[in-house]
Length: 467
Image 1: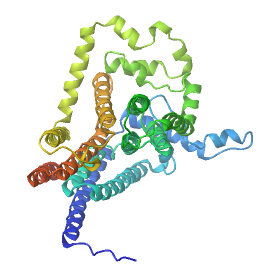
Image 2: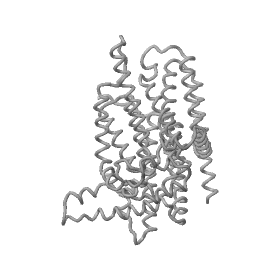
Image 3: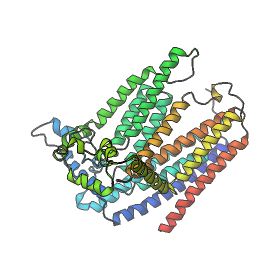
Image 4: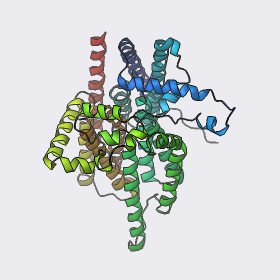
């Protein structure tokens, strides 16, 4: 057996710096989370939190099954299924396991720290994985942006937002992997993580829809290439797996989210019912709140004439194209303003870096001689997925922000940061193999250290300002 060489001093130093910086980020994250939790407990629950609390209390009755009249019905109620049309069942189901109505403040405090612990564990795992594959500042920047600009804003709120952020990231990564190597089990991961995200917050459907469209286009391209291209590529994407993979995806979604859909069909007359799908076609938030209050169940919804149901068709019949454009532009301006100081600048710099590295690799280095010097063969569908998913979420949020909050948009911080840095690292690695100057790599790392310092300094100041 060949003995492995001992780690070099530089490797030890790298991991020591990583551990030190991760400790600082973790301390700052816990400190700021504690401040937010104290502020949240000192203020009354928001209407959305009250809905989650009511659904949690209703779910607690499901954990006391009565088998005197039936066996199957009580067993069915043990899985996450309850919804009120706005709140999804996963977080109320988890919270019902430990909620004590007699000590509500204490229970809310403990559940908030459970969310902190859950996300802190996710950050450590994310940091370990990124440190194995990325440059040190890139790994730390992913963790810092995810922690402070993504997950921190959810831990003090009694809702499914924290779970949604986690499962959206996992679904996003599964989609990226499936676009590069579409093994059948990866489709199952997309469906499973997507269903869990759906049970947390009803905002995952655009991502899954974009993945299905892009992967189907990739399968069609593979079919055409197999019939008309004379040379064989190096791709690991198998078009024959696509149809069976989609069936596996749908099966996973139905198995996990099926009980919720059954309950929604019983309560509201539609398996995929969610108030968001209707109120987004109203003009302002007050009208949306009134519409929800006036239609709490299936009977009230069935009384609405088909032509009076809020929908895209009705909206564009009663509004001009200019009004729709103004609403989109106003929403986009509002969202861009909110992104200032919330990671938007860092993401913009990372996008510019990736674009510059791609151009430099294409035009300033020798032509690739083998597969290790070329970009990944599935780069085009991956980039198409990233751009389409981001634009889709951006357009939907810009439209919806007129009638409902768009805080879920911050859930894209972690996936976009990870994707952009993944792209930068991949392009830079291939540029080095083609003989690119070492100055490019050093400039890249210096830029990332500056972005990391800017992010940490901003939250360091906010911590002491709040204290």
